[in-house]
Length: 92
Image 1 (cartoon, rainbow, N blue to C red):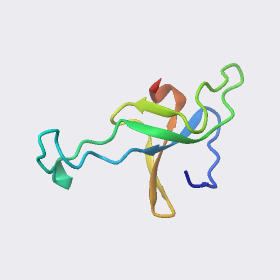
Image 2 (image 1 turned 90 degrees about the vertical axis):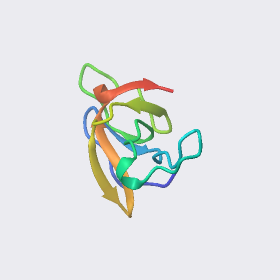
Image 3 (image 1 turned 60 degrees about the vertical axis):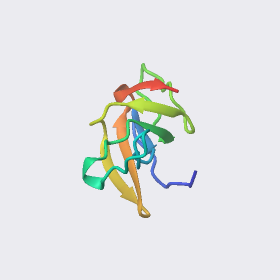
C-alpha cells in the first residue's frame, strides 16, 4: 500500500477500490462499458471521528460499501474513494 498525503476529516474514510472483474466465471471477457463498479476496497486513511462517535475502521481493513458510495478522487494516477464511515456496510 502506497503512502498517501491525504488525511480525511471527521468521520470520512479514504478507500482504494479493488479492480473491476475482467472476466466472468465462465471465461467471457467483460468490456469496459459493461463492468460493474467494485463494492469492496482497502481502507488507506481514516479521520479522527466525531466527538461522540469514535471510528471503527482502521487503515488496512478490507471493507464492503454501496455501489454508489463516496466521491472519486485521483492522486498520483491512482483512483480512490472518499466516503463517510456510515457508507461502509462491513469489514471483511
